[in-house]
Image (cartoon, rainbow, N blue to C red):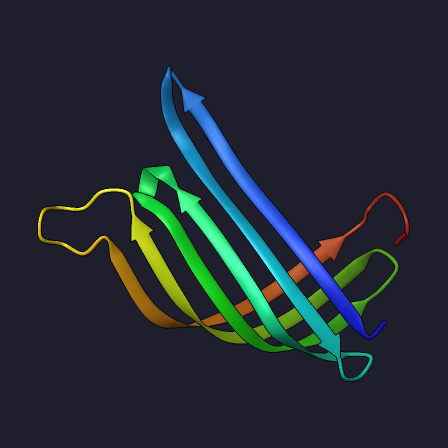
Length: 122
């Protein structure tokens, strides 16, 4: 394999005693290009995040970086990644006079462990 495209989505929504206790969603889209069997570059990745209870309407993080495919066994895979990017956050509500948007540079370290305890990789 020379390339790998990924789309990850995590969503949480919960209620307890009629009150919303969680409501967040995170999606990541990224492209990896392998320069060797273990090393790869990520020329483009983007994360989109929403958390109603943390007042985050949208948090957008485009980034690029490098990665190391540390382990690829029958039932376990481990990747170590480091990326740099830019983050823009739009808040749902703010106090009068405060900005509803925040921007900053970010470092994105990632450790991705995947396992398939009930069978081999497909």
